[in-house]
Amino acid sequence: MKVGFIGLGIMGKPMSMNLIKAGYELVVLEKNKAAADLIAAGAAAAATPRAVAELADIVITMLPNSPQVQEVVLGADGIIEGAKPGTVVIDMSSIAPLVSREIALKLAEKGIEMLDAPVSGGEPKAIEGTLSVMAGGKQHVFDQCYDVMKAMAASVVRTGDIGSGNVTKLANQIVVALNIAAMSEAFVLASKAGVQPEAVYQAIRGGLAGSTVLDAKAPLVMDRKFDPGFRINLHIKDLNNVLETSHEVGVPLPLTASVMEMMQALKADGLGDCDHGSLIQFYEKLAKVEVKR
Image (cartoon, rainbow, N blue to C red; front, side, top):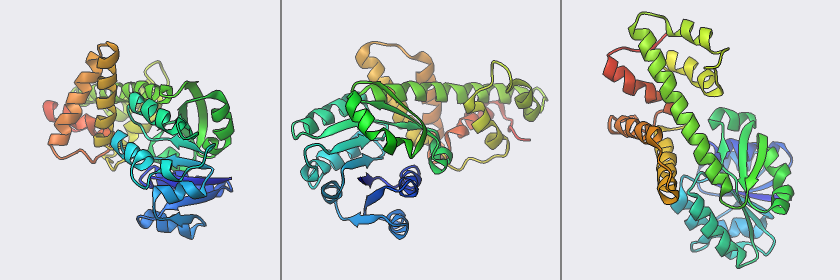
């Protein structure tokens, strides 16, 4: 089976590499150094999304947001122009659910199937091949593509029809953002009150307050490591999709809106390309304290 991959950024490059390691024939869009590294590892190259689709049975996209996915899939020289009936597009980007549904309808007119299958886990889990995939689409299409997705992930779950994958990802991003905010408040309070955050972390991580987010972000924050595993700018993008969707369906999300404004403040301070764990710096600035070991 030949797999095309378009979008070789922080997440896409290691995901592609894991597909090669799993034995899939890979075709990548020849655009940048990341593509050169994958070509050196055995991938074939194509000049346009259309050309990628012409060579592949499944085409995976991993792009920043809805407009980029629409352009790559439906635009000039897009996937839709090169894919054959029966080809499957797996969009693993995190985009607006309504856009996923609109793209799927356009593809269906040409006999092309689609899954929306965003991921969670950030760069470390993309490298390890232990991402969590939340997929929306037809059951038989999900079953057909399961092994390909599992080559990049520890968990692959179908959550419903097309669009449900991105609804699930929006829910995920709410939980992650609020967890980081809660951790930040707690550690800033402890530090300001004269208690070592490392001691607090070790004391609470095994109890009800423990979480995957806490274990992933607390050590990095205390070591002052804010290199992006997942950028604030990207989390802002996701929360914007969350809030737009919540308004469409009539669900108030006051805590999510508050964290969104905190991230916007950090972006204004020039921290948009830092890891979302940098949310703690919003609180540190207010409290005039730094959380560190």
